[in-house]
Length: 620
Image (cartoon, rainbow, N blue to C red):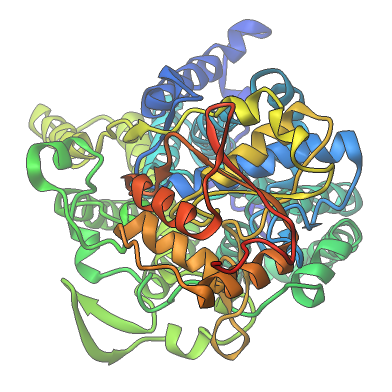
């Protein structure tokens, strides 16, 4: 295996083409078959969205879906109007949002802009989510087939596990960044090419572009990939058998990395500046790192969206349904232990060092995934873990520890592929041994077979937005808001703006929205804008059904808030989608009428025109 330098000939892994007979289409037939299987499986997992992209929503994460659909609409807006891909004032008016400090998926929003124009952000979202899962599995398959695995079936097994592991199915609940698992094998592919002599410039250039693309789509995942590469290469290079070759290859590798740094730095200079020092930036993350850490028990439990979960063996140890990042089950963890012993026992020089480095990556990321303090089946112990010393360092302070388990999933996928490759290459000592291995793989993997992501219905786009009627009441670039105001729990207002941007032409701005921004304690980030009196009142009405009496204090506060946002009109659709289903729309309507008076009825919505600084007027 060529990592830092070529391994001995007897353990080297030839490229795919050298082990495939024939040429042309015939040589690509195995790859096409694996790609078709991956795409079919991805379509099956996301089929709930494909049944009705406009009317269905990810049931467990409507907020993130709305955010990514907003970004896809913003991509069309950028191409039609120009603007800054990494900062916008269309959301969170009047101060705006630092998109570089959020997951801006910049490459996707530009690349899929034609599809967004033709079919809408809803279809682009479902397309990217499907291609992410399929591309991750296929990318890992190609990587394994090129660098580690001789048998196509074994590489396919590893690739499909890496692409559809429980953690990635969990993140298919709305995360276009974390389902882009294809970034990792693509980066690793070119990292492992760096030691090739006399090609450091070419490989450094390509890796620099790949890094820039990876940062724009999944910055946190790119950080994990870089860290895993460092652990793997560092461990392997320090082992006695690899040390001389590593020392010889070091100048070439450093030269290539230098080119990578220059290219990636040039491409990412502006977004990196905005991320760390731009307006509306922040430190850390808007989430509690201790809460989003993996429970030790989670490694032994089954995910909810799996065959085992369907049979009643799912677990509630995850912080939420989108963060079931390990959940491998006892049988798979036992099989992994057997694989470790088997592979170690039969490893040749070169392959042995690769295994040790791979084990190191798995162990390091498993420990990191447990977060700052050990949790054991929901019981937080007093045992401090290494992440407690890392969590305030740059990059680590913005990561959620539990997600490090996604790297552990990929390590497991590689171990499964290596074991299957060996079993297929060498004759079994007996039929009983063959049966035992087959049964072990089946018992470990069949319960983890994924179920489709849960979807639900969401509010249809009102004619007021779809037919452009809003233009009669709001100036181009003026501020318009739906009720309740757009947040992670009530994201419809953000969706309406996304669909308007995707159609081109005039555009309105919105206050609030779902994003990460400043405002948390001690300068750390928080989810959304800091609530003001008026948007908080409507949010409580929507989520809890509260309809408190409205007095002149509330009207004074609303007048000041609406003037701050420069709101020109407010509307309430007939249906409102919440993060967990419908909200208390009647409470929102009653509160709005008490505060603003009787509305107009336009295009399927209740509409209130606002004179900034004047409305709502005090009670007579």
